[in-house]
Structures are given as structure tokens and as C-alpha cells.
Length: 238
Image (cartoon, rainbow, N blue to C red; front, side, top):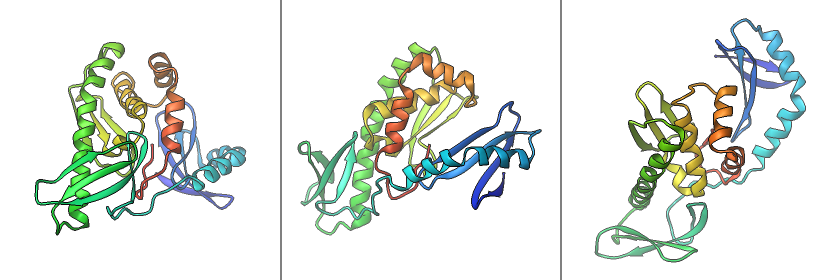
């Protein structure tokens, strides 16, 4: 990968063995990336970017105005998300084991020891998030294996800073971002289906999009919802 400058914009250029040039603008900062065929030179890439400048600037403006959370401190009345809903955190100090309880539609209680510091409070919540996400994945995998006609050999949950999910088509393994537990359930399902379709088509090409249209006709709506929800302090992209 290398970079070129187009009208003051930095553009990442990646050359691949593909037929068509693909231009994308990615959250959260509006990074511009062009995947170009091996035979297309930088001048052709530059012209393609120039032809899309107004669209690029609209996309970047949308990302820049997107709501973002500041760094979390895991204190009382701090906002946290679970299954697409915003909750206020309530720290409860007690002598028993650490636990997390969704009290109602607006409050999540974290029970910790009196001397628990910020890192320990965060760890309790993250472990609960991980458990909740792992409980939701198996029935979705089973459902979509039958629909798509693929086999997921293994799956895992990981906190990732660059994408919502990943797939190794050779091993049949899928990784999902821990942050998905904070999003609406159909966003989790969309990402899982996205990665499972990669077991049939590794690239993001027309065939991949046709498969997504077949199995999940409204996938673009779910993608847009996911990308328009509040971003965590880290820079999540997809």
C-alpha cells in the first residue's frame, strides 16, 4: 500500500488482482482508500478520486458529525450501551463476588469490592459483555449455517480496533468484535452473516454482494445503522 495526495486529500492506494477500481471512505475519520487493479496507474486513480470529490466530502462530513463517546471511567451515571440501548452505570460496593445486573431499561448495576479501581470495574463489565455476546452467537451460527449452507468450524470473540469481524475461509473460523454486544441484535446478526458469506466468497465483490442480497436483503440498512451508532473512544471501522 502507498499514498497519493489528491486536492489536499491523502488517499491510501492498494493494488490487487481485481478487474475494477473500488473507492471507499471509512469511519471514523473519513479515511479514503482505493483498491485498484494491478494495471491501473496512480494518475488513473487520481482522476477517479477527483471525479468523486463531492461524494467523498459528503461522506467525511457525515463521519465527522457522528456522535462519539469520550474515554470511559466506569463511574456512576456514566453512559454505556448494551444491545443497542443506552444505560446509566451504577457502581454498587459490596463484600460479595463481582457481578453485573441489568436493573431496568435505564440502569446497569456493577457490584464490586469497596477498593475496586477503574481497571477492575472495567474488567468486570467487559467480562460480562463477553459472556453475554458468547451466549448469543451459537443459535445464530446454527440458524445461518442451515440458511447459507456453510459450516463454521470455530468462532471467537475478541476486542478489535479496526473491524467488526473477520473470517478465515480456509479454516472456517470467524472472529467477532466484543463491541457488537453494545449494538442492536440485528447488527450482530448482520456482521455474523457477512463473515459467514465470506466462507463462500472471500472478496467484497459483486458475487459477495449478490449473496448478501439473497440471504439478508436488508443488510445495507443494518450496515448503515451500525456505522451511524455512537462510536466508542477507540476507532472502530468496518
